[in-house]
Image 1 (cartoon, rainbow, N blue to C red):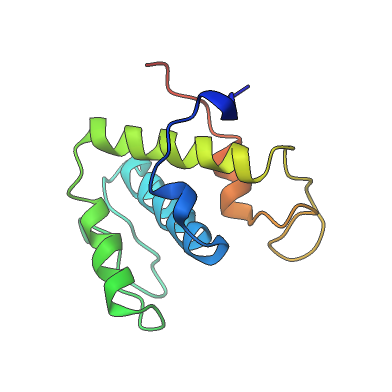
Image 2 (image 1 turned 45 degrees about the vertical axis):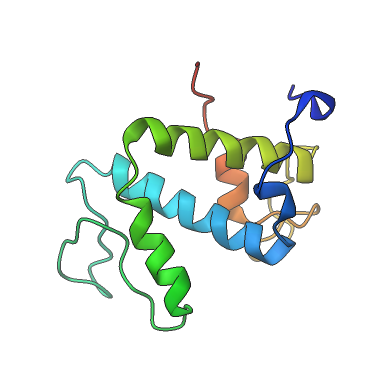
Length: 126
């Protein structure tokens, strides 16, 4: 289990709950994009073309869309580090594993489904 006492202060802990939720969602989406065998993210009904980065979402702020695209430029090592940092922050913000089936997209602890999946993602050994 991650020891919150040994944690070094970082940018993630300064994010509001909404900002952290958006970041964890975007990191999760980028993780799915990278793990997709074709090497690109595609939702056929919404984005018929394959793109080498997360697609722009009209309902997202332009800065968020830029940040989502910037995730694709991170090296694998930097991205794994980001995933690890998000995972660590997730275990601190939601210390108990989120319960499943407590309403649409939310568990009893308030974690989103994306956070639940990140929480349960296998940890990368250093």
